[in-house]
Image 1: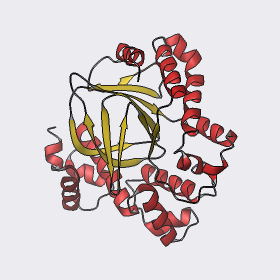
Image 2 (image 1 turned 60 degrees about the horizontal axis):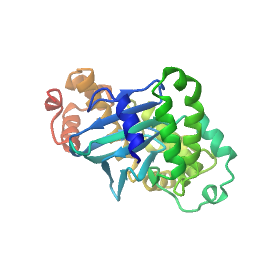
Image 3 (image 1 turned 90 degrees about the vertical axis):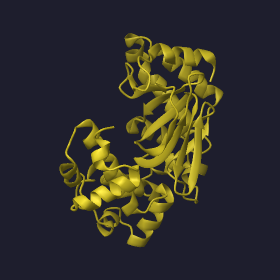
Image 4 (image 1 turned 180 degrees about the horizontal axis):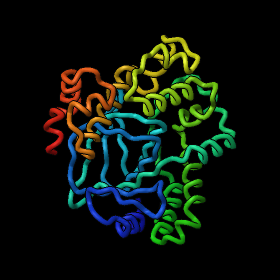
Amino acid sequence: MNSEIIEKANKLIKLESTVTQTFLDDVKLFKTSNFTKRGPLTYDFCLVIVLQGKKIGYLPNKTFIYDSKNYLVIPTTLPFECETYASEEEPFTCILVNINKTIMNDIITNISNKEAQNCKEIKQAVFSDKVTKPIESVILRLLQALQSKEESKILGESLLKELFYRIATGQNAYFLHKMFLSSKNEAKIAKSLKTIHDNFNKHLDIPTLAKYEDMSVSSFHNHFKQITTYSPLQYIKKIRLNKAKDLIQKENLQVNNTAYAVGYESISQFSRDFKSYYGYSPKEAKAL
């Protein structure tokens, strides 16, 4: 990223290690000078553009780097692990953009990328792609507009639409195309992920989830794991534990109430799963 982009981002960032909300609801910035060791993280249908520093993301069978040369797209709710590389000399700085599904659907519908739409190989949901000159250009203009509430209101949507178009025409955007085609298995799994995300605290069984998407249990399980790298049960557990951490740390909920709130029937099982996932107990999480 060129120095002008970083300069404009720094003008907008108020505090380090805290997410900065811009004049556009769907655009936030984040900056930290602290290295963060590998730990759980969940993104939800967003674009991460790194301006400085880097993150390394880990899925069970994949490692990916997102830095100033490679942006990250998460087209659905996906828990994974990551570590952040940052220092006083080179802070980690990024733009977090929520992807508007209506706008992206309109873009995908109007792109004549048959190669992406007809790709036979199942692609994982999360993908990274190269930061091109056109993408750098729109990022610079977006950050310029974000300096002003008036410019953000008037120019913001069109700039985001241009950015989404550049992402949708990236060389690795196969999954992004298929998830908007309702007949494709990728789209069915994407809908199922949303169902899980919206109903994590309820009883969820795999046969019912498969039936909702008109898929056999074996086909649902296989496609689910290929796309997310997790089995459906592993995914449900991770979503519940991520929600639990938020309830404990942000809403100060008691451990037993948290367990029931995220769909666990056994408090002891919840505590074991939580400690296995985060490396510390739910009670210790309250003190962090």
